[in-house]
Image (cartoon, rainbow, N blue to C red; front, side, top):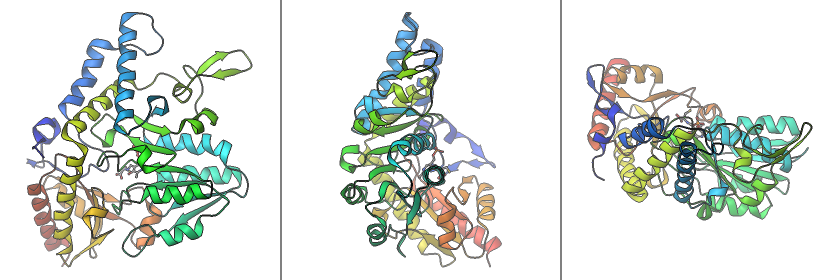
Length: 404
Ligand code: C6P
């Protein structure tokens, strides 16, 4: 892939007197100037509220907002009416747990998640289960860090109403076999919700190929602005579901004691939407398509292979998740024997290398791995092999200083 670093202003700055090496794109990606400029241009030239004004400026703002929706929908092979803008993955999953939960889940019904879920795809289902008297079950993982499909088969029953699973784990990096999971889940009449926060930014994702019913992801992890995300859902489900937030824009007619709902997708977009952020996300999609998602995936696979090989070669490092780079997304979690991950991150930061340390909002998974926290590096289009080499030799210095 062409070197894109020059497109990313923040990557030109120094940290601790060194050029920044940003290895935390799993938390949020950096933004290219094309996205920053699209957001700035919206505020400079077209700022107005959408779907309300009859004047030229508001018409143009509405066109930009809906054009962005069209681009994002095409990116995942979806219809714009089934593509709802939210504040992010977390809001999309909360919307589902509330609204889908309202019509699909009753006392004694079962909801199936996995132990590798981010809290955003776990806690909303816990709250729903408690509210409805439903049973929440979690599928385990194999010793390789892959989803245990035998366990999945065992826990999937005729009472399973919703299967909520991450496409790519934000800790293990594991890519889960969604088409297979969806087929099994549909076999018992369950609806399949996919958390695609760590997949849509990094590989080609087409909703029909996945075979799922719902897909959630965040703009800020795919070169777009913070505060914008997407919930895609099959029309037949979305039409049946009650709204999540209510108020302006999501209604058709309102009386003092009742109201009727707007068409899709507006039924789920109450209030003033994040218009500039949507426009920025549209620009991010253009940028990614310009690079080609297959090329994005190939680039990351090469980086992951290099980093994985380097980490596995160091006997003081414990790596979590699959050993095969082809089975992983762009994140790699690890620990240095006997060293606290926060200390590792702090020393690397002193060399200008930004990594994440903590439980990465996946406490049940860390409990299963037997550690309270881990270090995590995550890659994106702007990372290079030289940065991986710099990271690996910096890690040796951390071990020299803290490990022995
Ligand atoms: N994971 C990470 O460093 P939001 O915050 O709504 O944009 O995304 C939540 C979320 C949901 N699912 C997965 C798999 C995720 O990785 C995330 C965000 C970040 O891993 C921040 S904790």
